[in-house]
Length: 307
Image 1 (cartoon, rainbow, N blue to C red):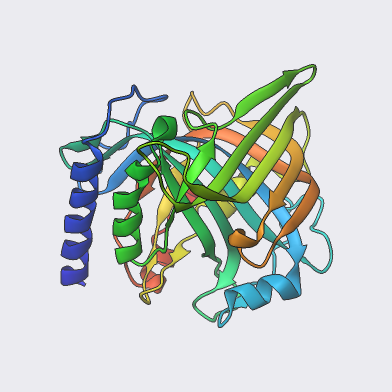
Image 2 (cartoon, rainbow, N blue to C red):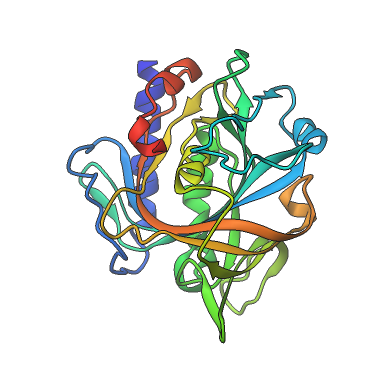
């Protein structure tokens, strides 16, 4: 494990050094975790997270050879209204991260992220401990600088998380307002197939479209979203990784959303238009650990991140 930890540290430092060559941008919220975790990856995140109900058989096929953990629908703090029968949640996430740090190094430019992830996956085979399984993960540079995503995508893939470079709309924030009566927002992810940073545009393909509104009530609680977001991630190298997001700061500003999530074929097996999807927008602080055994990741996940 010492060699794996050292390799992860070197790769993360390379990631920070290369991307720090990009232009500077002020953070959207403070990174208060870096001072307490100097050797771990920390950042500020602002994004929207959707829980998309998808046919359980389709989800089970996507996460094979693992099984799904039965949803804890009896826990009213997570599922106060249950969950649609025959369906399993899929987390669709679009966010912007900034003030990204590790040790004394800092990335002065934000990065945008798009994830399609299945929570409540049975990595340990115990039928109860939930992990997340990455269907697709995308990363892109700020303000149209798609090429800024190549180094972190390469580093992440080397550590056991396959990451693709993407273009985002908007490319300078977590979402964009397109109407004011009532306020309507969009966020989109587009797979960069052939980049063209010189004359642009390159060849891109749609991955995720979201169109949503603010709502006062939700079938889920904030705890529901925190739980599915911060379950340990299953890596491709046999290990797992804790990527916790803490939503307990004064600047979190949580807001419930409702809208349409459209997934296209590059996003995996879940292509389709999903209406009435419930979501959650908030700011938080990211704490990313080095890869570790999956049992260790489960045992050491901080309950404060799930609350």
